Image (cartoon, rainbow, N blue to C red):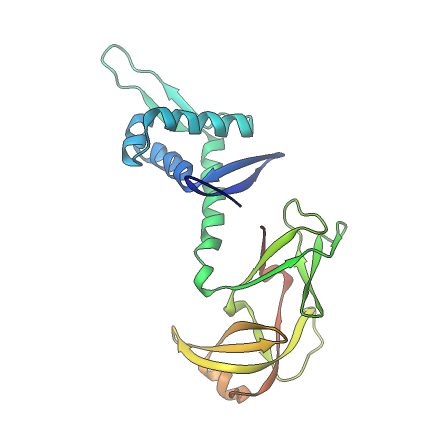
Length: 230
């Protein structure tokens, strides 16, 4: 993620290319798709028309693909612009990034460096305190990359004892906080130097007799983790 005057700019992988897209460019493409006109889209997005053309040119140069198809009208006007299949795919990819970012307030964040990559099995490793965390290798990452690891509180499960399973990300911790949130019980679980939020049902809280100060184990599958390069 880069920061420019028009806001954060995200690197999206498009085939074997990397394109840069911020919210203003995204909105321009979205409004072109909605309005069928670059002029109308630029007005709706409060983007100067010449800047809109420049944004489209940049995206097409970076991707080496046509993003917008324009058909000129006759003497009476009536021309239209619409997104190509590549333009629609860019919208889809950005919405996926946006959906992760919208989780920001309710997602656990861990910053770390990639320590190991297993290309054959498509997994990477980072450190959580002194423990290894196994992550899915999705995208172009390298050893040493600084990454932000995102884990939803609902994707973390609680155990009273470590159990034998296919889940290898299991860590011991202590409950240091509890509150009701959206009909669930949110636990604050301290693991070494960090605290993770974990959501459980009231039924699970009663069955496991979860109380403040209780030592527990938490676990999460590698597939439940999102990883973003920072």
